[in-house]
Length: 289
Length: 257
Image (cartoon, rainbow over all chains, first blue to last red; front, side, top):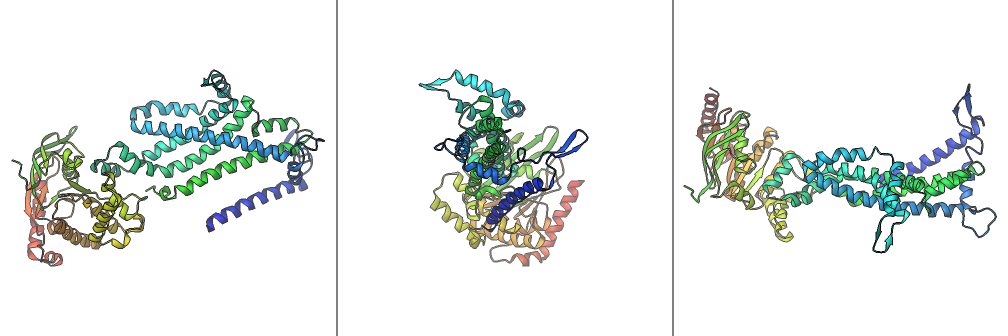
């Protein structure tokens, strides 16, 4: 518990330090930035490039549409967008997690499959996301299952899972193969079959490899969901909000920062959700020998 | 040819790994309750011989019987328990759960396996560590847990591959005394692979001396296993003990040719 409290204090302190540095930069550095000849080596620090922290926070409480008194606040819009994207990210993480684990299990079970599939699994991650997004939307448009037609958010979730499955498949495979030869032979002498060896040996042994993989996958699925929202033009999420607010950034720069703040908070919540998994599997965490 | 009273029977067993001739015409019979050690230089195939009995390796030719069955059937029926040089305890299981593992794998209900594991932890003198994590135990204690685990299915045969090889000399002698007591109480036969001549002599009814590759049995020396009313430390200081050590050492030297 002490360690956890200390981590929270450290995180808050880091945030405060960032705010102080931001404001110090505005206070001390020249407003037009620093130029050497024609090259700008430090950015402008005026209010349109770096709004005050309190301006950004204040903007959260103002209505989204100026003048309309009953309109929702910017803060509410950002929160709603972040929540929408969080749902898609976690959905993508779950989908990618299940696919990644099944792939890892299949690769562990059939060595031939590992040698055949692993290069393609690695190659899949070098294809740029923005190249895949229109493909997924295009394929999805042709799918209609029992009266349910493909929705744009489903494309976002699939694209997020595309990024999430990779660390999980690779981490899980390493974990499943981590037991020492002597441990595997012990299970053989106990006349344990593949399934029993999996449940009693390989799965517990894979947890210390799986947890950091899931953490990576959670971050990847958040990035994937935001980029996918932008490249598929899906409405309702933080990705769309970033684009909308960026278009008005010259006139209202602090608004863009509220959306960026929302995206950062989203990442933290996703990482926190994975942290819960960590607590639940504590028993298996230290099992690397 | 099979007698019900023999724990292990090997006849004309050869084992080749490609070009390497690991075992060459091994004939060996271990009686029920007998303690037999295999000793020889590194690479003489003594571990391979134990692994053939355990169904971890298949002999290239020859016949192997474990309690009158094929090694494969004996493994499926859990007729033997095995302990390696590394205790190999599962860190996510408590000590008592590690001892329960063989029973757990075979679907024995929780109450029965817990009762059996508790009994075995008492046998190896670790009852108060039942709830501990394996990493909290010393090397010698971990090895005792591994022995208790090997004994869980009440096997008639215990296979041990240098189980005390990683322990310091003092712990090792204490473990030898423990093992003698356990073997006596369970009446299980033991096939014991070791590098140590005094260890082989003090534990065994018979010490089987093997030659370097290709692994052959060169000589069988009578060991000095203490009887039920004999103290193991008295045996270690007896003249017969030193005579047997000398006999094993000479057999090893002859094997080197």
